[in-house]
Length: 269
Image (tube, rainbow, N blue to C red; front, side, top):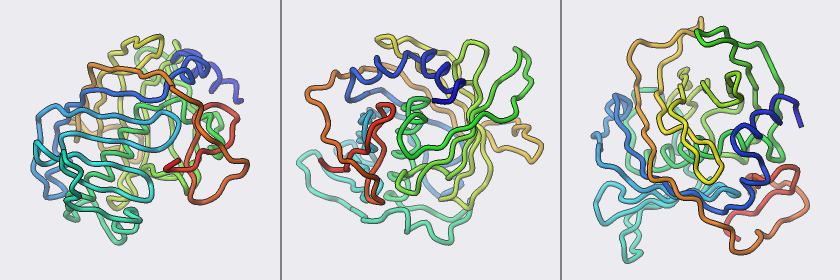
């Protein structure tokens, strides 16, 4: 494992501690101008998010209607009622963003896919960087007011639903994530940077309770006002009941198993 990656994984609680748990649930409150850019109304009410920590899967409730929730995997997204009636669904959801720019209107399934994959990635960082298929290298650091922020550049495989293939993660002297730079490919590829702060300890795992997302300029400076705020609380880690099934090779229909140098889990197993 990359030396810096090993340090930051340990600083966030360590891969062995992470592997004790199966799911992470949290209350999420989001605000900002981004939804308006996609012709969607703002929803300021807190919602409950559950992410699976060793496969790319998430549920957000409520979603749109108080009785609805969304369910996500890289190959399918759906909105359902509390009695499991499907309100709307979409297979191969990534393909539905073809030709979009940052102001292209989204429908609720676009939003469900975007928020689900994004929040899954945020809550699984930095542990997702050790997964098989993710290539990581240390690149130039940033000089900030509190010292040097060392940087890991990650290249994600096509099987992972995420903002873009190449992303950069910046870490402070304590090894904790400070900044995350990426391009939102599903919204025309415009450049963003996210600041993470107000860390809390949840059963030994370090997670930032606040994130602020800014437009990023070519010189890496940030817009004065965030486009999105994400506040996270009431976090609960759920212990694994049984080990996940694994397979021996990577296929395009598979997603990450976040447990160090292990094979990939097949979605839906």
